[in-house]
Length: 488
Image (tube, rainbow, N blue to C red):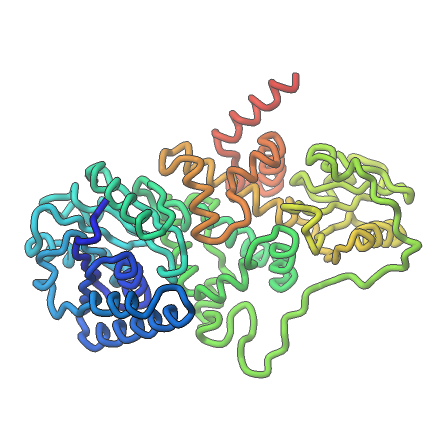
């Protein structure tokens, strides 16, 4: 671990650099903040000072401690001022050439035992380290915005990174009251890679004309219990930023179908509909704009409701098999097939419902119907869920619906990350829960569902599209085989 007496240099005084500087100074370090613009450094120090004093007034630390932090935060007028730093964290523009030029200069200026860390979110560590005389001293230290609040830090090791360097950064992040995870250098690391399906599934359904953004987000939040839906989150991040990351990951993995960017999102970017920062994205943020309407079915007469059949909610496998209700229709949880496909094998109407993280906590249920579903069967099912205190949204008859398709895709990507050695299973779940506030880690969620369920859902969706976007990861395939063998 880097001791508190170590001077920390931060290069880049934008939102991320200033946030990292604040984290380090709160942990007891003297911090030297550098930027090409002296005024940017001044502004950043003023902002940090204001935040620290505001925190002090809220009782997070006393006034004496606060003023001590402020005194330890100092401007560095030139890179030469960073000469005696033991750790330097870069948080500048996400451009490989610019970062390489910076680290080349730092290596010439600083002492041989300095640890150099890049906050890159997308560049491979090797692409920067290979220009250094001492590549073993460089690693990734990827914070999440806002750095003083978000707990996760991805500690990224390149091929040449010395183990003691990555361990020192891991221990340092822990001492800074962060939640670090070890990651092997790979496009997107953990979070930006594993999170792709969260956006990708939503955007694919939008491209197909099957997604109403407001209803989709409501289902993800109120059924899947995610903090935010993908459409509102993209608007918050920035349409252009999210699209650029998608393009980068797609290119880095040689155009793998599961990373294919959305043509609809490209259209929004071209139209400068970039989300909250431009006042318009998937939703309208201009003054006086009406709130987006979530599709919610009207209450049905209580006489249409039936007593909830316990078997349909007792296990995921039983739920997918379904139960025949008094009207003669089959109610079942999605297994990745559409209702229309399933009805072709049965002589009865079918209504499918979506996955929930916790049925008791879920406030909304998404359902879909087979073609020509009788009105009395639909009313029966809507009434059933409403009697259980759930809002009901009817969505398009698309493979896997919304939450099930999202969760299985997230689990599939997480499994690929694990089997490729990018990170271990606990680190993946920790990263997704602490980096993007997922309600449950994707690997833990897959284990809760059961590997057989995950594999079968993905196979059924892939059988519908046949484009390689839902191919089951070998990790999951093997786990499903093992799970099946235990039943036999």
